[in-house]
Amino acid sequence: ILNVEQSPQSLHVQEGDSTNFTCSFPSSNFYALHWYRWETAKSPEALFVMTLNGDEKKKGRISATLNTKEGYSYLYIKGSQPEDSATYLCALLGDKLIFGTGTRLQVFP
Amino acid sequence: DTGVSQDPRHKITKRGQNVTFRCDPISEHNRLYWYRQTLGQGPEFLTYFQNEAQLEKSRLLSDRFSAERPKGSFSTLEIQRTEQGDSAMYLCASSLASFGGVLELFFGEGSRLTVL
Image 1 (spheres, rainbow over the protein chains, first blue to last red):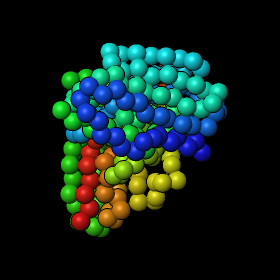
Image 2 (image 1 turned 30 degrees about the vertical axis):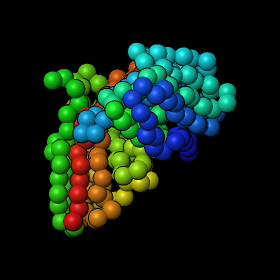
Image 3 (image 1 turned 90 degrees about the vertical axis):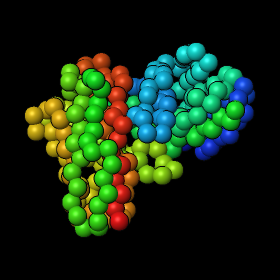
């Protein structure tokens, strides 16, 4: 059974601060690692799908890296804004997604 | 709206009652997944279908839970004799699976169940 861990569990930052979260997983065979952003009362929204060791993806102020050999992925948010407040989930994809527990980010104005 | 839709969005029921949730996936997607999310946890896998076939069912899914996807389109998740521990957000997702694998899951907004 794949165990996907995320840290920290929650994070409170001021507007303008940069922040990063970690997703750890056992190095094993899987198709891809996904990052999702889940705002309250909305559906989880896919941010990145990463498949290759050394992958780096970027979308605006948000970027992610993947190291499959050592079993981790980082998500970075540069210059956090209040609208970035959400739960950020990582998940490993085989036949199904196995999710981590998420990092709840709160950005204060 | 061509996304994944779930109904109802909220359900409050008394312990012992049966509840049913419906999920309408993106129309061309052949895979449909059910997840459950409780406070402080990430979504936990319950079951998934490829077309009308239920391919995997989690050990988390007790005999009181049953899911169907009779025509390979919409799916229902029924919980019989609900217990307070069933209170959770039930998420549905769909995807397109091909020989190359599954690329991305698209989620609905979830059905929140509260069992009193």
